[in-house]
Length: 421
Image 1 (tube, one colour):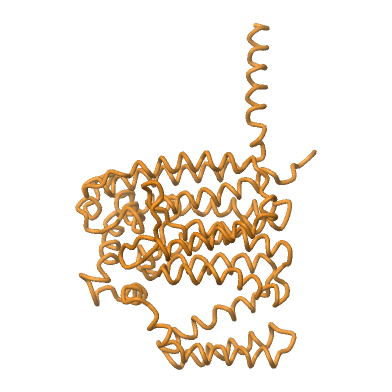
Image 2 (cartoon, rainbow, N blue to C red):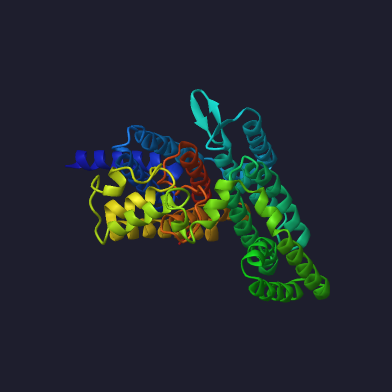
């Protein structure tokens, strides 16, 4: 009996010694990450079952590689990136330039580079590069001054321009959400952030409903008055920017590709082009509605198995979940994302420094925006912008980038101060 006790104690000590480097790891976050990735593989396989594709297993392989990356990064002290953030930023820019020079084109967009037989999408990894760069900049100089905000915007603008020119409207919007979220967490005046977004909204409202545009401009003038040390200049600046952006709405609209215009408009009334730009959305809504409460069952969804939704395993994977797992399955997915985001907020709050906290918020902004927009476009509440559902949609570069970002967050969690009692 004594020998068994000693043996058990020895084994327990060995396990504790083995797990010591990950003692502070956020295990709920890791479990949610792996759970969603596992479900993604199951649903991708179901979506590919009858369309001749058999590469669903790559989702799990990349997930396994991603798990290894998380565990390695979690042991590594993230603070070292403060010294190397300009190198990370430079690599990000070089990757985006390489896409424009030697990238391959598909569906009218030049987004991929062939490396060792694999198609890599640098813009996905550029999201992580942007998060690291902005976190380092805002760590050294919080966004409490207008100059600090403009500096951060200048850093974000360069990769954003390259991504927009690919063209990749969806990822460029993700860049914007990351920047806004990190600026807010970095102590930027909320009024400044609203005024930064106001030109886009002004251009849309000006061309959609002119009376509402006057109300919008009035609101922006008031915010400009309250948000700056020089109220009159702030108000006049807000008026000028919104007036110019409203008049330039037609010009900005002309810069978009035809398929991008369709994606932005047809979600309001997909029946205008039921066999063209509105087809995806119509079929997705039919699939989700057909799932009912409990779903039709795995591999039993008619819309999914009869291939009514093209490329369903990527941007429209949520429609397969809605049809085959029903309302309950969809609700479980939403709750999983909610808990995952809650863990990110908790890690950001408990980080030992602003740099780690900003990294967590950057990853949070990326995941929240992509989740809301992707699910919104699947159910007809948002335009189709080509944004994948994190951890669930098929896409090796996107999945690996998500694991890289979550690995950095795990490093922040693993090196936070330990509570002593």
